[in-house]
Amino acid sequence: MAPNAPIKPWRLTLPEDMYGKLMQHLFPGDGDEHGAIILAGICESDRGLRLVARELHLAIDGQDYVPGKYGYRMLKAQFIQSHILRARDANLAYLAIHNHGGSTSVGFSADDFASHERGYPALVDISRGMPVGALVFATQAVAGDLWFAGNRRADLSEAHVVGNRRQFLYPRPPARPAPAGATYDRQSRLFGDAGQAILSRTRVGLIGLGGAGSILAELLGRLGVGEFVLADPDKAEVSNLPRLIAADFSDVSPWCVPGFLRERFRRFKVDMAARNIRRANQRAQIMALPRDFLDADVAERFKDCDYLFLAADTMSARLLFNAIVNQYGVPGVQVGAKVPVGTDGKVGDVFCVSRTVRPGHGCLWCNGLISPSRLQDEAVPASTKKAYAYVDDPGVAAPSVVTMNAVASAHAADDFLFHMTGLKYENAEMAWFRWNARKGSASYDLPRRHAQCLECSAADDSRLGRGDNFPLPTRPRR
Image 1 (cartoon, helix red, strand yellow):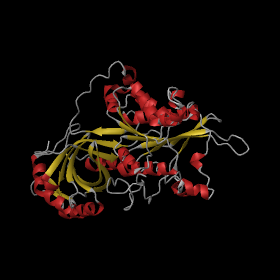
Image 2 (cartoon, one colour):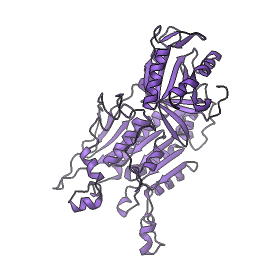
Image 3 (cartoon, one colour):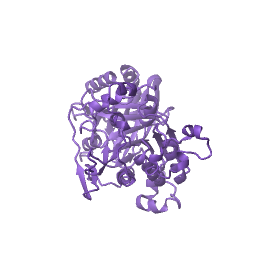
Image 4 (cartoon, helix red, strand yellow):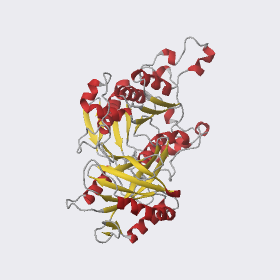
């Protein structure tokens, strides 16, 4: 532990591709020490501080990483200067990196700490108060020392590597979790007590608690997920009852309430979902927001989730979900079902989809799933639409069937489970799942990625990994 570290420990999120490049650089098989720098966005929430790795800069041995004046090796001054200035100008945190031997435990040496104390107060001044610090890696561990203005500092508690599966890195192996107990005995036989402990401290965000969202809430509650953030402004209607899990007529027409008050007492969908989660897991912590996800203060609650589920189908919700995934390094999935019916009443291909999205992969913009024209239409006030004869797509009652929602939701929840517990194979399918119910066939759509996408690419002006110092596409509360 760093000496005199009074600030609450922080966390780090690393994309899998970046982590792989870093490990190859630090551990090429020569048993020597190597260096690098990461620039990271900042996420501050009720869970504390989290850094989101945006840029990786590898130090060339003998040129950027040279014999040290006080310790074994050091980053050269010119290499440090160019990247601390970039961090300052882009409002990013600066992290210097090197490696030690060992596997599951690692820590800074006395020489390392002395180097931090000599150099980091000046770097904080240059960065104009943005945090600066260091990481030291072993093959399966990482420790961190982060400095703030006023010579305050904090230790790294854990790092998450986000890819097909999630990897957890710590400075030293965590304590063995308590047995899962009888409630989760059968499922913990699959992923162990450690996997059940991961689920119990996982925070998921559910956007939309209608047909698909209510199923997801039920499934995740029964898996033992510990924290939920729910957002949906709508109340239940009679036509929702066949698709909302455990809904009944008292949710839309309370029998004990006079007729003229029944509208007021109709249940919000988020409250019904919270009720179902608590039936499955009384210990779950639930933030049920009967509000629109697009409101800035509501979206704020989702930026530090561990996983997001998008079960709302407006273009604006897709845009904001996609932005949070890339800007804050939060993986997620967009679920949906489509039952196209022509004007002649003929039914087309009935299909459901589960589209995983994570930083740099599966971007909804890159794949044409966010329509600029639909975004523009959704931004037009309802009164204006009516005056100019706009077709209000969200108001059209499209066909919806609980079984189709269940197929998409179960696939998405299963993908989340194997991602969080690390059971997914490294070479697992990365394409998007599509089930065609009329054909009885499954297929996969390989998502595209554009090199200069302003959402998911490493382009200088993209939102990838930018954290709090970059605007989200939200709107002020009305």
